[in-house]
Image (tube, rainbow, N blue to C red; front, side, top):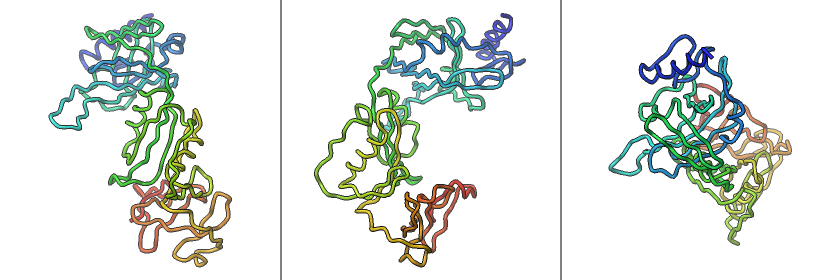
Length: 331
């Protein structure tokens, strides 16, 4: 009991003085071995969900997860939230919302949000971390911190299929598409905000297994899904539909494509058997001629044989920080 009193006193000192010692915890993360434990019955119960406020400021939504986060001497859980950072701009786009995440745990009627250990502080969102009084009914969560009260309701469980194409550092399309299932619109939007550079993105109502209606036009693409052999699809929509079918109702899928029908596979045993190509492998582990990667395309890396790629003559595979196993870009 004494350790709990010390912990909450420590939290108060952190808010006023910006720090605490002797194994306490601050909003900068859990530190030492003296913090209060987690009320597992509360954490694993009705709090686990995505909550939305419908507000135009403060906490827009918060997802309290079951994902354990073990730090020295403690067991907690992770949260993700979208909040108003207070920034206002004259011109769009304006980053007035921020995505935050960290550790949370429950003690009685107290819900505490902490940054992940080592995460730098950001003055625009720092006030969202710390201790809240909370009350919970079947469908409503009320968070109180000082004179700030936020009332949230459970997000409507409406499965969404998230589809996006990644872009390279210059914003150019890479023709790499990923599809993922999300439990709600809020979760889908959060997922897209965390991906990074995008050339294309779409949130489709329903799970990814929902049948795709495509136009009856012939604009062939050569698509590769996961570790399968390349296959010619009538158009990009048909390839996207196959990718979503692979993801099903609860999983994810990843694939890539190039415009035009897949070339006929030419067997080989060495590079000299191929005309301006290299002798690689397909998903069936057979040796075939494959095109070299061109400038700006992926190369190298420690990967399965069918995904190995080499730069065209005259180009070099530039790996970040010399990490050849991580792959690079032809330059």
